Amino acid sequence: MRENRPVIALDFPTFEDVKVFLAKFPVDEKLYVKIGMELYYAAGPEIVRYVKDLGHSVFLDLKLHDIPNTVKSAMRVLSNLGVDMTNVHAAGGVEMMKAAREGLGDGPILIAVTQLTSTSEEQMHDFQNIQTTLQESVVHYAKKTAEAGLDGVVCSAHEVA
Image (cartoon, rainbow, N blue to C red; front, top):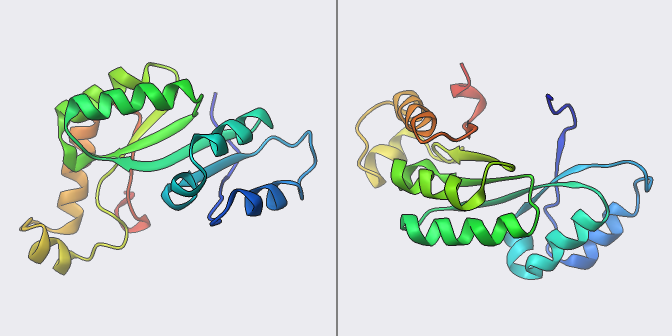
């Protein structure tokens, strides 16, 4: 089934801010929300449990990037939280992405970040020493993400085609 709800970013610094925001919605309206690094690091796994207990879907946006075994273990923890979607950095490689999928299991959606949307081609060349175009880099990472068996990628609107 195709998901039609927009993903609402809970870009708040505190658990209390999230509670105030979510209280503005009718109890029977089930949202799809994004919990990013700032909120997750501030509130911990309890924020995910709270949002899930309200019946909302959760995209946990932590962009994991580490050795395959560590990512696999971390994904097992996240799967126990009941996240609906999470992500990794494609730059971690096919083996890391496969390990992430294995650790997360088959239920949740797993996507990979190709290039951060804040990365310019100049930064990519200078800092990452990737000497292709930004478009080519994103397409390469997208192909590697598909090879790893993930569900999709994150890229800017400029690379969607």
